[in-house]
Structure formats: C-alpha cells, structure tokens
Length: 258
Image (cartoon, rainbow, N blue to C red; front, side):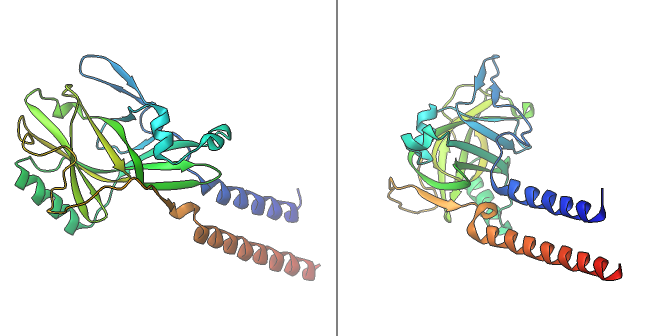
C-alpha cells in the first residue's frame, strides 16, 4: 500500500470514529444487564433499554410499560415505526460541592443517614441522534438494585431528585429490602437516602423539601445532548477540515520532493 493510500485510509478512519460518537449506544458500556434480582430471587427485567454506568449501585431497570417510556420521551407512532426508541442512561454524577453539601444537610434534616451516593438517571429520545428529555409529560418507574452491604429489613429508602435547583423527595414504593422503586418525571441527579423505618412517613411522596412551591406542568422539554448538538457537529467538521488541510499539505510536500 502506498503512503498516499495509508494517509487517505487514516483520514477515513478518523472520520468514521468521529461520527460514530453521535448517539448513545444501548448497553455499549453497560456494567450490568437490564435485569435486577430481588432479595427473594425474583428477576425483574427492564421494559426499556438501559445503558448502566453507575458503579456505586448494582443495577437499575425501568419498570413502567414501554409505552409509558415512549410517551415520556415524546415519541409518536411514526417515530416508533421508524424504530426510534427511548433509552435510559445512568452514570455517577459530579455535582458541585456546594450542592452535595446542601443535599447532605437536607438528608440530616430529614433524619436520614448520610447520602449513600449520587447518580444521574437520564432519559434520551433516540432518533437519528440522541436528545435528552429533561422533563416528561408523565411519570415513569425505576427500580434500583442496592449493594448487598445495605440490605436491611429495618431500613427504608428514598431519593432526593435535584433538578433545576430544587429538591424533591420520591419515596421507595416496593417491599423488598435489596431494591428501591420510585417514580419520577425528570432526567436529573438523584441522591439516594437510607433511614430507619418510618423516617419519611410524614412527607408526601413527590413533595418539594426545600420550601419550594412548584406546580407541575405536563410539557416535556427536549435538550440537545452535548455530544450530538449542532455546536459539536460544527467542531467535528472543523477537525475534519484541519485534518484534510494537513493531509493536503503533507501530500504536496511529498510531491515537491519527487
């Protein structure tokens, strides 16, 4: 193979790698399959594709019917016919220290133990590109598999949903002590709480716990995912132009030496 062919081949490889980064790939890097096993041995299978990348918990599935996740992601019949689908993406979140301090203080105020961990649970509309759905027109259910070290029949769990600067408490609705189940209508950061039984009894499920009085709306919001937004596409194109220019100059220099 000539040097010219190798350079062109390298250019095409870089081109394909850049544009393959555009969409969330379901379970491409998942740590666990879309199955959660409860403390009594039942296997719960996710109704929606989950890309799981949150190592501080041991699994997460979607429990609502797939139709509810499609609705939450804003997909219509035509989208579904085109094989567009919802994807849930989880990861460890990196909130600002001032925010985690505030969440820890809120957990203490509620009578809970220190926050177990913070994770992002994000719902994407997977069409020709990935779009993050910030807020859904309906609630969907998630079940989290907790680490075995936290198993206890005397404890209860909840999550604080941190979204748009506000804190909202969603309580565990299942009876298993190795999992927790809650419903939400937001892609957000979630602080997982653990407390003695009865700690959250006087708090309404879904209540705002930071003094905020919020009226929920039924409009969904679609945000461009940073790696698939127009600005990133422009950056990718700029990189390609620079690479093409470098290759052109390199080939010209080689030609001038002949």
